[in-house]
Length: 579
Image (cartoon, rainbow, N blue to C red; front, side, top):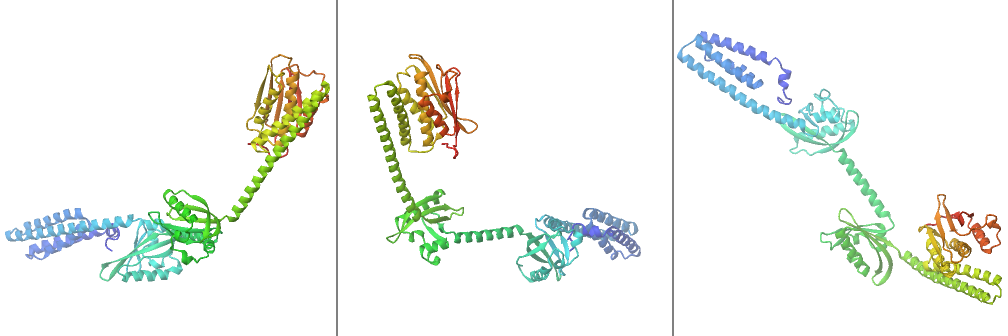
C-alpha cells in the first residue's frame, strides 16, 4: 500500500532529493547538447521525470521547482538557439511541462487528502484494527490495538496474522479458516473468538472483516476487533440469574404465576406458572399458559383479585388480599394473594393457602374471647369478694364498743379499699402487666384524700411520677398498699388540726435500673430515738414486709419532716417492664 502509513515513502527513502537532482542535471545536459546539435524536439521530455517526482513527493516546493526548471530550460534554448520558431516550440513544450506539474500537484493533493482521512479514521476508530495483505501478513495496526493488547508495532508488523501470540494455539486454525473465507465472501459475517493480551489476560472479541482490492490480484483485509467481554459476562450473568430465578420460582411452595398485561390493563394473560401452582390447580401448565386469569377463577374471589390487578397495574402499589376460593360451587379454602408489579410491567401473583391459619386464628379468637369473659368474671368476683369483706369489717366496726377495736378495723377497711381501687383500675385497662404506675397512684391518692377529708382539708398533695413507667399487677398492688399506709400515716400524724401542709409522692427510675418510690411530708416527723423497724404499728410492719417481698430496701429520713424512700429492682428478676 503506497499510502498505508503517513510519510512512509519519505521516511524510508530519504535519497529521493538526490535522485531528483541527478535526473534534473541529466535532463539539462541532454537538452543543452540537443539544442547545440539541433535535435531539441526529443530531449525536453526528460524533464518529465524530475518534475513528476518532485511534485509528487514535495507538492508545493516541487511545483515551484518545476517552474524554475522550465524557465531554466527556456533560457537555455533562447541563449543557444535564439530562432523564433525554436523559441516558440520551446515555449509550447514549457507550457506542457508546467501543465503536467500542475496536474500532478492537483492529483497529489487529492491523493494525500484521501490518505489523511483514511489515516485519521484508522487511528481514531475506538476498536483495534489490523491490516493484512493477501499472504496473511500484518502490514499495519492502529494505536488502539497496541493500547488494548499491549504489543508494539515492531512486534506485530510483518508477522502472519493467525500465527501471532495473542491468538490461542487451539484457535489459530479456526481463525485462519475464517479469514480465508472472508476473502471470498461478498459480505463476511462477524465471528467471536477469545484472544489474549500480552500480559495473558483473555479477551472475548468479535471480529469484523472487510476486504478490498489494492492492485491486480492483491487483496487487503482490514480486521476490526471489538471487545465484547463485558457483553459476554453480562449475558452470562443474565443467563445465570434467569436460571437461578427459574429454579427459585419453580421450587417455592407457594403457588405463583407471572401475568402479561396489555396496555389497557384489562387483560391478564398467564405467561408462566410454577410447579406448586400447577399442582394446586390440578391442571397441566400447557393448558394454562396463554389464557386470561379470569377464565380460571370465575368466583367472587377471582373478581377481587382481578380488580386488585387492575389497580396495581395503574398505581404500581403492591397489594395483599385474603379471599375465599371455590372450585365451581365447592369451597376450596382460604388463600392469601400477594400482587407485585415488575419493572417490565408484568404482574407476579403469589397464592398462599392459609386455610389452616384461618382455622387456627378463629380458634384463637374464640379462645381469647372466652378468656376475656373469664377474666371479666374473675375481676367481677374479686371486686365482689373485696366488697363483701369490706362490708363484714364495716359491720364489725359499727358493733365495736371501743376505739382500740374500731380503729384497726377501719385501717383494714382502707387497705381493702386500696386493693379494690387498684383492682378496678386493672379491670378498666384490661391488662395484668405493663400497667401505668402514674395513673394508678394518681387515682389511689385521689381516693385516699377524698376518704380522709377531715385530715386533708388543709394539706396539698404533690405527685411526681414518670409517665412511662409500668408495673405488673402483683407489684402495683404492693405499691398501692405502701402508698395507703404511708400517705394515711402522714395525713393523720404529720400536721396538727387546721395546720397547712404538703405531702410529696414520687416514683421514678434511677440510673441503676431501680424503681425509687418516696413519700415525704414536712410535719412533726418521727423522733430520732425511735427506730421505725421496731415500731409496733401494724401499717409500718406491713410496709417493711412488702418492701422485702419486692426485694427492695427502705430508708427513713427525718430532715424537715418525715420521708420514706423505697428502692426495688425494676426487672425484679424478669424482663424489664416498659410501655
